Length: 278
Image (cartoon, rainbow, N blue to C red; front, side, top):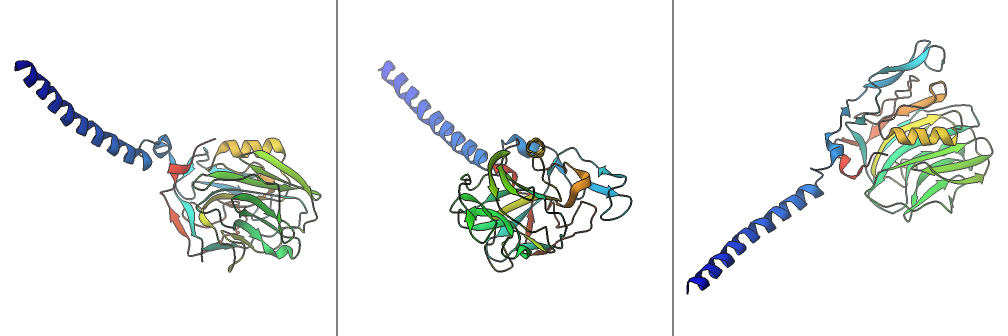
């Protein structure tokens, strides 16, 4: 009889503590999914405008050019969030070089066709960076160039394209694809971040740290830029013509005053859960 009572007490205790352990496991799972235990959330966050290119001679000059502020590759506090239907940023970027590099970080919320950067002023030879059916897309002549890597939704990527006047290379997290031989016009006035145009192929997700150079970065420089992470500063200060961290505003921090204009864009601090530093 005594033995049965002890067994009953043990079973009751097991059931009581078992439910408690199960509840704790569920709570911990929820907290983990919310990113509470993600070390990225405890990393320093750079406030808006904390790092910028200084040009003592004014926009477009390269004499006595340097970085000013706190430029320690800290993650931005905010990134740009696009709604996939009506949000985009216009920039007055321009240049005359036949070589260029575009670098940005993105996280797509959908695998539907969308673009993160576009300069439609290229007429029939424009350049745009996006995805189509979950695959990276370099649209250099009106139709997506095949053979690019697949991407997953809900994950941050660094996407870089370089063009040296003859060959176009693309890099996803510094891994190269290409080259593709094509003829592209120099950077012309007017570029879009978060859409192909104000009426088509809107980004559904996040974009951050957009950088444009008037030269083709080397593969070593592409790797270095990726390894800096989402808060990285430009590689070649003499060649940076536009730099939009998108840290709570569309301002250009290249010193060239190419400030953007936001339309239906939200700058959010809740973006870190899906980001893994290089």
